[in-house]
Image 1 (spheres, helix red, strand yellow):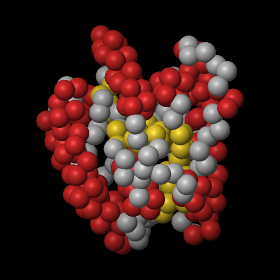
Image 2: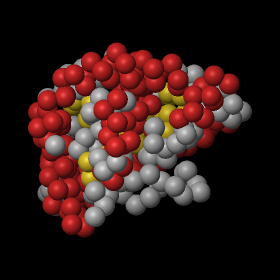
Image 3: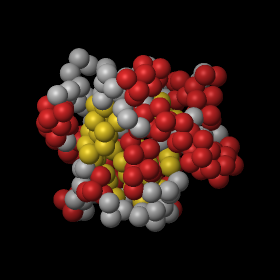
Length: 248
């Protein structure tokens, strides 16, 4: 699996830029309202960026990555770890990964306890990428899609994102996004009718100084993860205010 990823990685960059990004922009350019991009306007294509966000829809991270690529011209490679029970276990999921994600929905994580060792390898693989050079990694600290009735109430944080921070020390950019659905046709329709808007609020890079003295153990990884979720959901106040101002 890793060998296949490394082989498709160069071609995936071109596919994402020239094909996937183009049609997804056509289908979502008026649906998604990105706010706060000026807070990260200083980022460059040479940076190692960990983009952390809440997760309500299948397409949240797609939209966030398109926003920073289009608005900030961050053209470094992309990696988006995913749940493997769809994108790697089912033909439809594998097709989405290759044809829409350019093979960058990698590595997979699995729910089954029997695959715990593989999940440890997958997380270490993300650390390796974050250490090795310019990249944008999209990661959801809640670990799974939040299907609860209140989009402003987070799920418990998983410690994995804390491990990424304490081992790789990337630039951590928090985002709160709300308004996407998991129905791609409904979202494309809303893009052209204006019946609904998705608002994404980008925060300033997280100050990692309070974490610098921490040892890289599970309890501290969880503390970092909890703090990142707090920061992400603090941005929800701006998202709600933006909705009120726009009458949404």
